[in-house]
Length: 318
Image 1 (cartoon, rainbow, N blue to C red):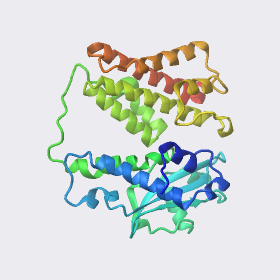
Image 2: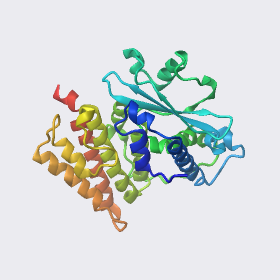
Image 3: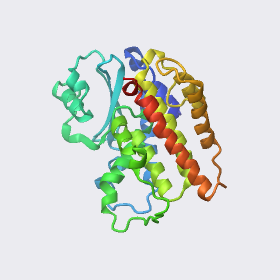
Image 4: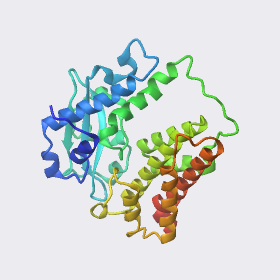
């Protein structure tokens, strides 16, 4: 079996996709990517200190009998996008690929939820899957990355299925003097506008680390959140053919893209972004107390500013 890494999965299944590239995906690549996804899921599952007696009742992928379905389609701007979802399988699962790039869908369907779109595919006979076999928590939001779908599925099942069953959840210390409120930085508004599961999970994990005074983890994670936000802003406002970055790009590459149209950021904005990333890069295990908290505050403000200036770019311009 071939050895595959996250960057390989991104290039094979998600980067600059078209009909010819989809046809080139081999069964060996699908098998390797499926194993990656399963192992990613199980690595997180094995970190649980408390596990249910009937695993599959709470964590559907532990049996390995799930298929990962990837649907490629054209959005209303004629860009190739994908939807991923899991469905039950009688045997060890696999990756099923559906190329519906040539299919025409109404504007309403293309701008509906993932569940409505999948229902349309089934009703039209394009996707031959019994709706009862589709895992509700395994319908993932458009905009995620294929190489992290195992992590998305596990976290959704933990949050929705297992966590509510825990009688004695791990106790969280309440640092009243440190606790922040999302509305201060308008994070709820940001999350609703972006509507990207991966981004939401990353940001919420950072806020949880902040609340528990784990500033090193928080600051490190916020740097990745900022990079992800810049990527989403570029993807939203730049034509696909002009995008020179991907989700593995460096901070300097994101800044380089923002210097170009339509953003054309000023030297002052470049300096501001570089300063924010410099804070992230200076994070040390030895940073303690108020200094570390102030670093996180600076990064959080930088994320809010970047959301206003770049993700909401057209709204601001208008």
